[in-house]
Amino acid sequence: MPTLAQLNTCKIAMFAADHNPPHFHLMAHDGSKALVEIKGLTVIRGKVNATALKEALSWARQNAGALAARWKELNP
Image (cartoon, rainbow, N blue to C red; front, side):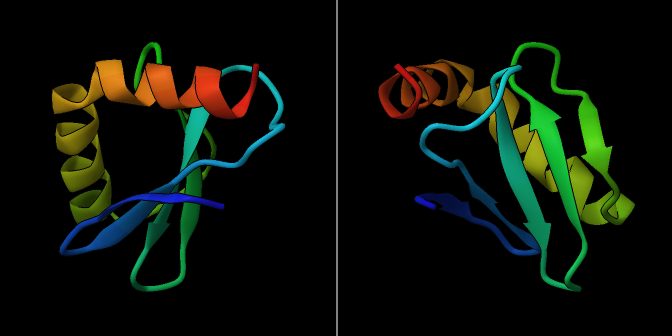
């Protein structure tokens, strides 16, 4: 599972050969996890604390193109 970003409160990663819809894995430093859809930046499974979610979504908005490209690379 390639780590895409190591942030202050969480880590963002993506699996190869993963299921649709295109998403990333958000792992908060407290051990909680969530899957976030790339297109709408909505949580589709799991739950993390508000601070980690806010930081991850801010990063994802700034890196939307890179997230989509990485998904296509890992999930052709």
